[in-house]
Image (cartoon, rainbow, N blue to C red; front, side):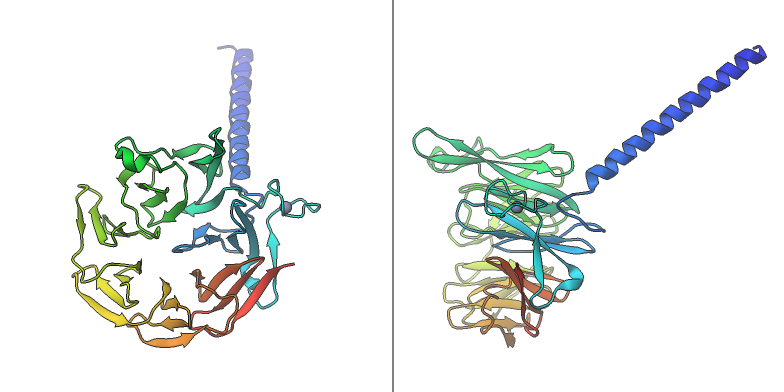
Length: 359
Ligand SMILES: [Zn+2]
């Protein structure tokens, strides 16, 4: 090769290397941009909170994002607060970036419509329910889940093919409830059917006998739920084998922690079931609607709102806190409850109640 050709070859190699470097760096830039969520700012991984019924929330190192449903047919609004600024009278910020917006219309970007945002395995997703007019005065909702970074549809809800016709007739494909059961499983529930999806959003299990509440739990590779005739059902997700657990009562409500399922009967007695050895014991009476959080159980009935420890001993109450209607979820050592245009909070043991408001 002549010297001139060597120089030329060297130049071409240099140009190719430079071009590849530019392409790689641009791809990295666009990846970074995709992961910067303009509505969900802040640093660190997004984390989902555990919640039972009501409204969800998620948080990163800097902010907590609260979702709140504000009226039938009006979807959910999302707002945020700095994690350092959880204090009484603190202002909540609507995540809408339009200063002229009143945040009351469907076009407000904080309004998710008939759906919500949620986090699964530290990734953000959007639950979307498209409205379809049936032509006879009725609407139905078609549920799907989108990857929030890419917009890719990762799950499309459909009425199951093998559903008995008498049940399918009043079913629909709406994503009514989405619950993160573990890092490996997610539950999507419609009116009459529920899907258990794995981390790739593949259907691992389907059931039609759904109960009153969307609660479900995963212990090992077993899925637990309460069915329509108030039995506690255990499903082996590997074999698909299902069985009703032998309890002495019908189950009204259930929630769980890492080791136990806490269930109540129709007389408002609460029991705890040890998953590892199947033993069960009655631990409290006169409970209402309750949630099981990190250290304590929070119960609301007509007369009082009580904090129990996990042995069923009363350790505090929150009856006087006007907007702590239910203890929706726990982040760190604080319990939160969203209400219209605000979020109530208190310490896990019921002390230091306060309210943050949208202003
Ligand atoms: Zn707005």
